[in-house]
Image 1: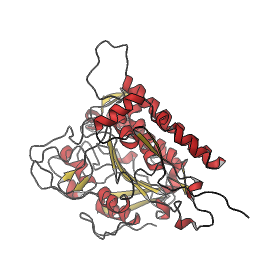
Image 2: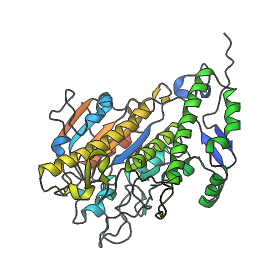
Image 3: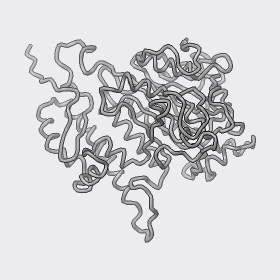
Image 4: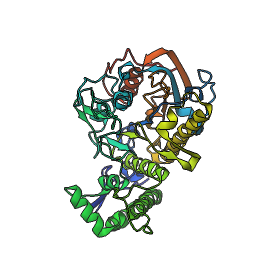
Length: 440
């Protein structure tokens, strides 16, 4: 038998004036007659930490039974399609996150499990995502991505005079004194992932000149298609179509509603629709994973003290206001609707990853996502029991399909220690951890 397939390097890019496009894993990148583990198709673990504010209505979050034979709760029901790769972890607490400055500290202490030193400048500890990025993100263009729907770049709406604003606008800390800024503008994120140029101004100029990223790389894309097989051509076509659709949505969002005479001074490409904004950012993150542009990410679905309304699901109340429900059942029901909606959007993102081939499985098979909050009862502002789930195959490291119920106030740091260890990070202690967790 003759093998004539040419080997394509995993880091192959499509290049054009002011643009470069990373490629998904193609069959042509896997040398013939080579063991899978020694090729580009060997599973590359990916991590993601998805944060939502204001806790959860825990009786609607926590499954009623532990073990493998458990029914999903109302808030977690949207994850039913991924139950075999789902691990619900109950009775976690985060004592280092407890303070009088609740909203100002809960984001920053979620992935650090360290109580910060009081003062206006950041002084906490390196977050779990950044520990992972140091070991598994150094051979990708972006060791990590920090994404949020909140406007601004790292300064949250919840500040406190004793701690400032360093801990409310991000969950990621590269060092104890370096909080990482978030990107909330889909256009800026798109240009960051696919644009080219030495400065943001140059990238914006180049993008404005061409308007279409894929038009810029069309020549190289056509040449590549002539070099690869039919299956790779189909995968490449689907991938570029996905980029084209997101590009169209970004451009449409940037155009805004031109029927208005007076336009507000808002960042371009941030949609008026919160749902479109949220899903667009998740779609861009999925592309970043597919193109191996990053293997580590954090995503803040909403900021602390969010005044976002959810009219599109029948909840006109501001998120933060309804989170102070005072045990009023009607308010709690509306809060559950918001929390379930967030899970639905997250599930849509997981569904995309599950359909993206990656070596001997899918991107979801090789990923681990922690989904949760650093608050429990939003009316009480407490840090126990915290809502937390793990979803994804983790490249075979997670069993999934179980609800683990630990002793009360088991440190959240134990879960984070386990997550980074299973991703291959050589660390034995994290935050106030007492040891890694054991699966059934």
